[in-house]
Image 1 (spheres, rainbow, N blue to C red):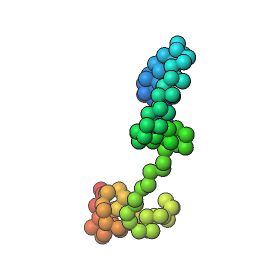
Image 2 (image 1 turned 120 degrees about the horizontal axis):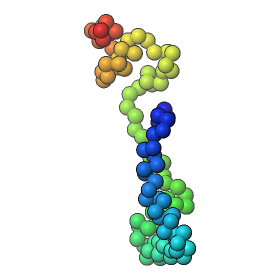
Image 3 (image 1 turned 90 degrees about the vertical axis):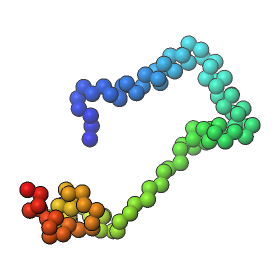
Length: 107
């Protein structure tokens, strides 16, 4: 879902990046110097610097997610029953809504 028209919240997060870009534009050798220091620290065996280089060159490793529940969670929206929808609406942790949790209790 996209942000409402006129929302400027995302632009606020780029102030730091803009400041760094301006500073690097003023000092064209700074980025090369920083990169050399990064490589030097990695060569010394500092794992944080080694990880940073790996993340920059190969991309960060994908995070794994552990999901609980059975295959019944893999239904498409048009396959859900009224009981399934009532369960979702009430936020119940049970697998299927019981008779007492059915749609009539939502009114």
